[in-house]
Image 1 (tube, one colour):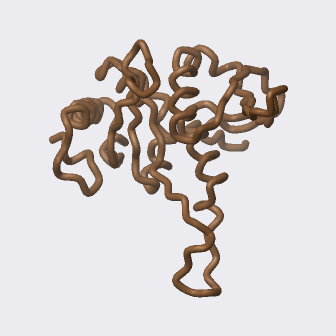
Image 2 (cartoon, rainbow, N blue to C red):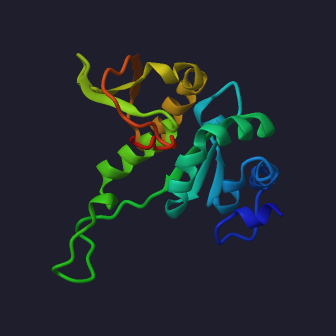
Length: 198
């Protein structure tokens, strides 16, 4: 049953079987999980020296819209069943602008390094939303990125921020700092239902 949750993959590791089994159990409570597929599951606990288990679940890009709708319900359930910090991200590819099959071919913006790195960060902090980002340079010349998140999501995100920071550093070599601030502008939270106008 766990193999049904994986996209074009037949041989599963024990960790992938565990996550796949947990997703099939969650299907009974959250029906939209049936359409969600997983590419792979990677254990980052040793790489980031975390005290608690940290797993990165990679999903195919076409499944990202499904995940965004149900992330606020799915993540707590999955963490409860697997007993680990779960981070979910879409599988994206970075293409070189020099590799072309034809001279006039241009690289899509979604395949650039900047776009992939920004998309990865948005996936990792989901279901929260980035309110602002600043690039800062320290006295010794090293860069870090300050990310502003919504204050209302602080309870959900606070225990996962260290894992997000460390995994993002391993994947992109970029340092992050998170800050929570009140959002005075109106926006619709990812996965929220639209309110019909009267």
